[in-house]
Image (tube, rainbow over all chains, first blue to last red; front, side, top):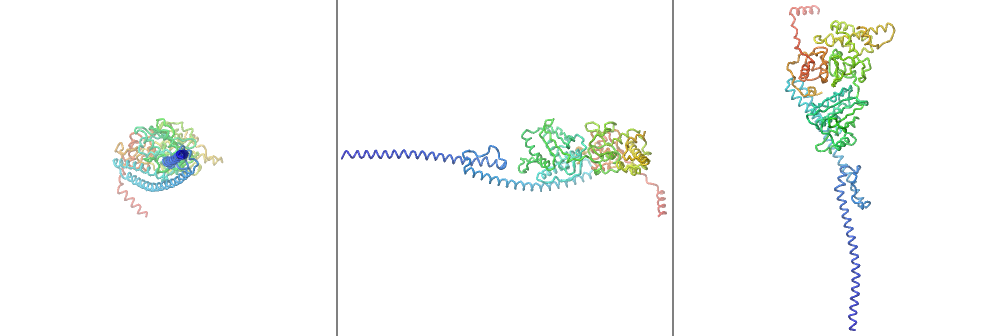
Length: 508
Length: 108
């Protein structure tokens, strides 16, 4: 019995140990499983935390910058394991809500910023215009050079000031403002130079007989002014900014070359994007300080249908900006339609002097008068025009002879020697208006009837210069009249005739 | 066109002999190469005969002082010459005026 006790103890201890061991082993397995599970869960939580952090740090800002519709490559969920899970879906949902909210907020901010800017810029623009009128009045009133100097400076500053306000207003959806009459492209470019700081550095070349339609004058002026301002601002003060005006097959080009620093690839790309005018411009995101120029040009180009490119290098190392104006925005300079801004008496307007190249006013008007019998188109070269080159022949700024439309009168006038003014003009004065008016209705319009009357009142003191030309024109009118008379008598219909040949006969 | 572009920023004519009534006469045979459009307009205006500075300014729609700068430039380059204004006619004799008056009275 005594022996049995230890055995019993032993067995019980053994069973106990076994049980403990089994339990321990099992416990260990459970622990290991739990640990694994724990680790997995911890990692999962960590992943989600990371994902959320990634969402806040990368995805939301990217979304804020680019919007949901233009996803940025490389900015997606961070961990591929979460793809398809409920968590990822929730995150996407959050992103969507966020994007919608951001878009709405941006639209509202943009709208209110634009509205505020637009109205304030419009009022500033109106004030600048008012001030310009006041300055012009003062310029008319004051005759002293020192006062004028100050006024010119104020005027110049005011013009730049008005341009800035106008540009911002346009960017905010306003119209460019002033309605102007159809003007020559050269005048448009000159008008643009008057609105930039360094207008003295701008050199304009080229003679295109092209006018810009009234509707698009102001936008083109503003566009060229912005480009000139850029060109002048980004180049050395001692360099020139060259502007070339050319007519091309489908319209006209204004080419602006500067000798400045140029633009790198990224800037060019950005500029091209802005200039295309395809994307709406957000006024709240135009750098700091804001760069309005290209954005404004883009808006105008898209609205009026011209195009601007800045992606070529100028031969001087800077940027070459090319404004292409399609034919729809242009008009050939038709002298008959133009109002006479230079209110010259008819006698002066009708006497052709050397053409004034830039202005649509006097030169074109005077030049157009004799040429009215021919189709009044500006561009085709008159074959005779290159012929005679007397000292008075107008030349381009490059020194080449200019094309002229009144060469019939001119060649005729070069032939005879300068006859005495007084007698010829006196007789012609009496005869010409009646003859041209009655006999040659088709081409008589070209001869300004006022010229006959006007010449009587014309002071003769210094005016020997035009007498030969004038005389020739009168004789030509006379010849045309007699030709018509003969044609009528013979029953031959020859209304238009060839006036200059007959001029030659009569004169010779 | 703003005046400072027309004068290229200058306000001081190169000579101060110009007056509102100074007559401007275009010289004949100088090429107009290189002249600004306003100067060409001016030459054209003065081509047929003499015009006073005030008239030129009026026709060009420019302030008189700006026109003076242009004219002074053109004088320097020899494109125009200027002349003192034509003196006003001497007042007619009283006798003639009296005769005219009498004649008018007789008619009316």
